[in-house]
Length: 272
Image: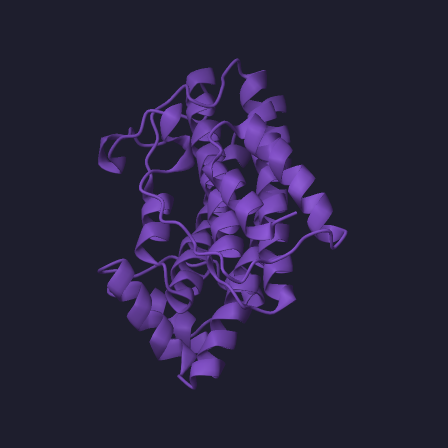
């Protein structure tokens, strides 16, 4: 199996069912060491997200806010929103495992494991959405995560901007959603909360993997990681270091964030 060509085909595959089936075949072969890495492979550039063929993509500012956690329609919209984040995250993990060559084997193992996790998250959420009578594609979506991928073709910037910024933001937002769902613990929300807890626990590990490889590259380049991180995320997401962020301190610490970073991002004097 040609590692890069097969993985590129998976990333280009649009429909979830087809993408997931291809990935399972690929991942089983990878885990069995049944693959070759062609050093001549040149990563392709993607101009549209893989889901553009079946989802309505719109500007995020035109999407309605998530407010109603009690009605069926409100629940469908919330599940669909998180489902889309997870599907986008599959592609982000696949691209990380595809785009950056000549890395240690552990690097590819890490990001393919992340892709496998994201697929499992997607399937759990898709099942919840189906229980509500919905399908992926019922609501318009944004392509913010794809755009972040486009903007970070360099390894250091990718590790800073995607796992250490975007996924880390998920560590902050997930508990807030869970808190609101806990205020209305009907049978559906109980199942939803279990899924969100699994996602939160595993996303800590994903951010931790990004933290490891970000610091790996900083050490290789002999640059200081904390100031480099803040500089990169401000360049990729202007204003991100200026605003006061409401952080999940315990999850971010577990994922590798330093006390100095947490204080700077939260504009607090301590990191407790």
